[in-house]
Amino acid sequence: MAYMIVDLQRTVGGIKPLHGVNNGPVTYGSLVDVSDYYHKAGIPLVRLHDPNWPHPREVDVHIVFPDFECDPDDPDSYDFSRTDEYIRTVLATGARIVYRLGESIEHTAVKYHVHPPRDYDKWVRICLNIIRHYNEGWANGFHHNIEYWEIWNEPDYSDKMWTGTHEQYYRLYEAAAPAIKKAFPHLKVGGPAAARPMLEFVTEFLAHCRDKQLPLDFFSWHTYTADPEVIARHALHVREQLDRFGFDKTESHLNEWNYLPADFAKIWLKGNEYMRRDVFERQKSAEGAAFVGAVLSKLHDLPVDAANYYDGQPTALFCGLFDIYGVPQKAYRVFEAFRELLDRPHRVAVEVSAGGNKVYGLAGKDDDGRALVMISHFHPKAESYELVVRGVPAGARMKCAVSLLNDEHDWLPLGEHAVADGERVRLDIPGYAVVLARLSAV
View (cartoon, rainbow, N blue to C red):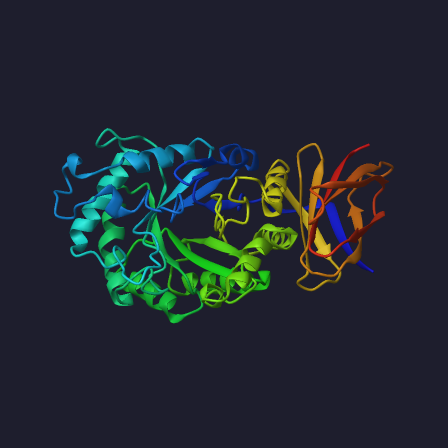
């Protein structure tokens, strides 16, 4: 029988707040609002890209600055009203923000706003004033201290996001990044939100930044997959390339990720509507929840500094956390449990004897010795494990309360056990499930 050893006396760092999301808690024109759930899960970081679906325009440059012929230094040239309100709803949850400077994706045959700016210098002046509005009070603005400013999104993906060449994007970054750092040296600027982190676009971009000595406080990248180990490979590759090009202090941000058990292009083809529905419903199910738990666990062994699930807003499609009515789904419950792990910030060692890439564990304890173990069984077949608890003080016992999340249950209590040092608790885990074991003094 496979086993998992949790050693309460062996700390291996801390629990990192990696359960950020994309986009805020409101959608359908603020008709549906899940702010309370964001707050309960302690969402730490919200990246703004394609917000308030199905009209994702709240943070786009062309919305804030609707007439490119106007004077970028005149406050009357701007319309911050919708963006102000949207950002208010995000900050009210307690989350910090990554503000994407650019445009939302365009799936239409005609592309309207995802072109290279006609005047790069003017576009940069507009972006500088957007930052001033939200951080320095310019144009009846605010002092939000938004730290992260990302230049565009997925210029390597397709003309849905960038109709220009890669070289045109490199020049846009070259125009914007130094200007932002010169005006606001305490802020962090980055990009490029790469859709394909393993391809040569990444190395070309990093070489350009190195050769031009451009600031790169954070490098952002995306991965949609059905295998947590793919995310691991991408994370290691990104860090390796950053270090190779001299960006060893640059943060690595996985700021779009989700469970995608199908070919992304194929699911949108005509006639594949049932496949499409199946994919997005699986994201919300215990299958998607087990994937979330696996990734959040795996990321703790990877050189990733921030992460944002795509996406958090309650929509019919990419959001695996809520349905269109704002009802929390199975994947959200794992975010909720992860928030509880942050209350036990000292990460302790977890060793899995077998299971390959189908079982993942993460455990933390607080200063009083109370611990929480999250076990994600990312596999369709049931399996039995023995949970071995080490580090219990000699002569003492701890209470081990076990609960289960699967398609039928949200944290169903499976019983309590009193365990001494080295004792084992048998866990019979169904396919695609997450188990929590709470350890406390008897």
